[in-house]
Length: 307
Image (cartoon, rainbow, N blue to C red; front, side, top):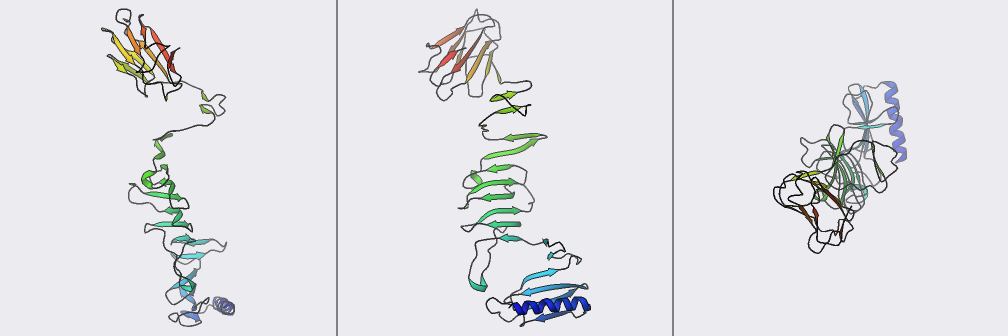
């Protein structure tokens, strides 16, 4: 086999130097003839548009390798003078194949327009890079899978980053650009150390160098606080109002501020009640009974205390 390759290279050099106009030269058996194990069935040096092309054939089913000169128009695959490989086809790096001996085939990772696939040796593609689709409905440009083919990470065509554990449908953690210079996540964001806003070197768990806004809820009737509330402003006290706190359990550190914004709590008080089985300062209800009065409470995880 080595002598055949050396002979092919020698012939190629001779043809290039002598500017041979022969349409093609074949070394070895006819391309249609079956090759022996470990051998090329044919080496062809072709002329296309006046430029040489080197083909290495295998078992007569088609070219195994084709080399073009960089100057050739629209080459499919070639090495340039710096040793870089250019291709307009797919590149697949795989540890998974079918068949044995000379007849093995690397199965395409997908029927989608993959550009680069790196396969695991277990089930399927571990990394896949795709060309853009005509729309972004469930389409991705890059995906990564674990050893058992569970989806773990993808870059969506719309620019979103997604994480999951088993399937694309389970990839429910998203980080994406929702507006200019704005990132958004649909899930939770957990910071293990310090978070700085407007400060690249935070000195506290939350370090905000700038203004702050909180959720303000305006109510004009009885109301039960939710997990999305922080400041609750009672705007109507033409009658006594009741504000009910949620259970303290599972809300350790939660703070609520209840304020009489109507300025009439002295006439019609605002009763702030704990949920059933929970207390505020050891009692079931605290009362705001002064005009423009305010009550701040914090949860210990088992009960509420005023602040």
